[in-house]
Image (cartoon, rainbow, N blue to C red; front, side, top):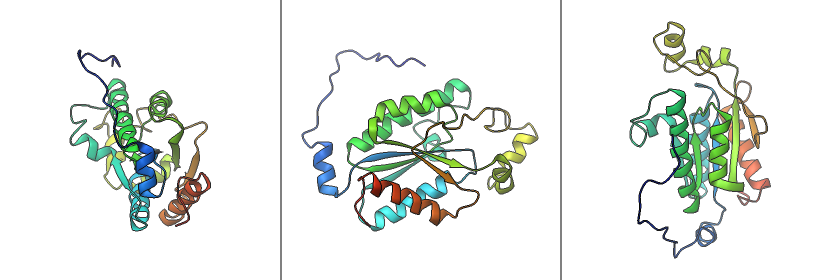
Length: 204
């Protein structure tokens, strides 16, 4: 889908309160944590658990979840390659706005294509942190909390990532979480440690 602006007579209005102002007020830097991985790999669970830890320590944080976004902002999109591309483009734009607001935003989307994730990185800049939630498809299929893999195997869900549609794993993610062998708490700890090492978070 086209990235060109169709509207005319519009102008970008600069904020009187800057991102740096908000970060100073929050006591932490802003960032986009882009959790990517197969369905049932643990993306949303880890993102929500991380949000709870950050919130407990008074951080400004929010989760953008794939299913939730498709109930509203992206309810007009399906799962064709073109719609997946537009889905991630919109999320990248929204995540960039959240980051500009000084927040640590956790996005939990399969986002199967590298090119689309790279575009999101381009929107968010150096604070875009790609987190690969690695979990073999066999393990995801065993978990299958929504019964989606079973439906995909039966052919009732077309274009299902990992079964009938491709997933392009990150080649150089900032962080890889082994969600098949590590608990949710351990994965959250790894993310917090990374954020502290980057200087985005102070010691919690």
